[in-house]
Length: 111
Length: 114
Image (tube, rainbow over all chains, first blue to last red; front, side, top):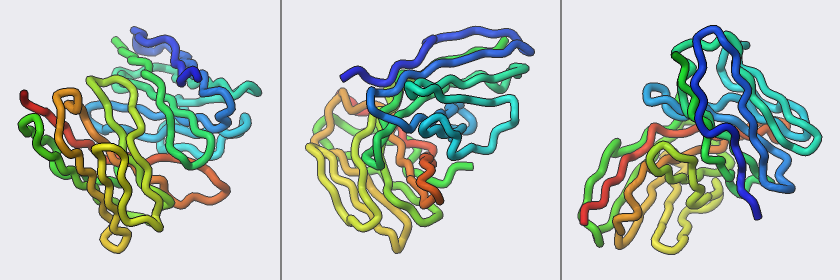
């Protein structure tokens, strides 16, 4: 069974640009959630999607958005990048409340 | 903000010894989960304990949950060099409409010395 796939693995962007990250969940998993990890703030919840609907959203500015497609694949977008957006972005999928499977993450560096 | 507080922030022990990490949280939960992370990579799910369970075992791992004290502990027995990693507790709070999210602690950095 393939795991959660996140692309790209690494990304370097300039302040003011926008970026799109992709996540393919485990087959059959309908819930996809996104987390941001930084040394200062730790792991923080961004949002969760289930059957193409955003069910829950963390405390992040509107520059952070996401969506989920009918095949459960998800994308998150960050517009007008700031230096503080540099982080490891992790995607996780789950079937029910049996725990989450995380991808390897996308490391975003904003310069 | 992080709901969980982990203790200690860093732990260094000799190979073969046991490692214990503690986690406290603030709100009611459906379950509590422990994850491992190696060098900034993705998180690996270790074990999940539900709010109506008090103890759970998985191989060399033993997790306890005390909902009255809002705390949990993770014990790794007979540690190995490969156990060197950061360990995070994460709570799954009671949310309406089935929405899911995890609230993570700051993590414990575990180092196993050969």
